[in-house]
Length: 287
Figure 1 (cartoon, rainbow, N blue to C red):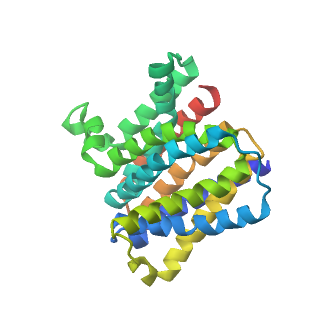
Figure 2 (cartoon, rainbow, N blue to C red):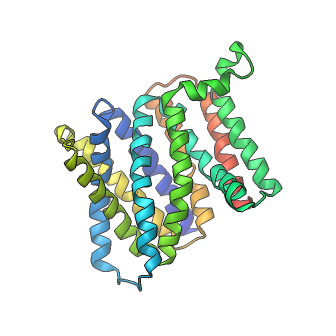
């Protein structure tokens, strides 16, 4: 059961990092929010590089990384812009769409038909998105769906989920061509270096976030703990099981938003998040 607690820890630290980022840094440009989030990845990556043996590296590793990195950086920008622009309860739950998009990608590109549990999971995710804006129902039956695209954080996280469906595939190829711990060390470091280079070249590196050292330290520690727990669980259990438990971060983020940020309609949002998480879990484990 060690993997379960590590996966649950990864969910908790991810939700906590989202909460701290929104509470303490959402007034800053999103480029600085990205710098804060990457702060916690570098120390863990360096520590891993010092202690793990370098595995045999296949050529597929390099082109997979090259194709995944730009998309992941874009996804990180959209992710943080989404939680900056909207309540956590109306943005973070849309991460549950990632496994749904993976199924749709397989259907469109490979002709792979989803099984009945996969279809049921897809319906649960969509139902959750509907319930998330159920208070809009008085404006018509389609209003809850329209609200997704009028709420900036919702559609930005929806787009992030679509990108994640692609980067998960590329990341898995890179992992199989190297090793899980090597990937855990190299990929976050490469992400941080690419972001730093882009921000430096566009003269957007800024350091206002350093004036909030304790909050930045909290985000950094939570991001580090998320990474460590993620790959620790991944080394002990099948990826689908680990990711299914990690998706509980959605409900934790909704709770953070309702309890500490006083976001409205907590009960409705928990129900919606529960449906979306349930659908994602069904797809991951049985789809």
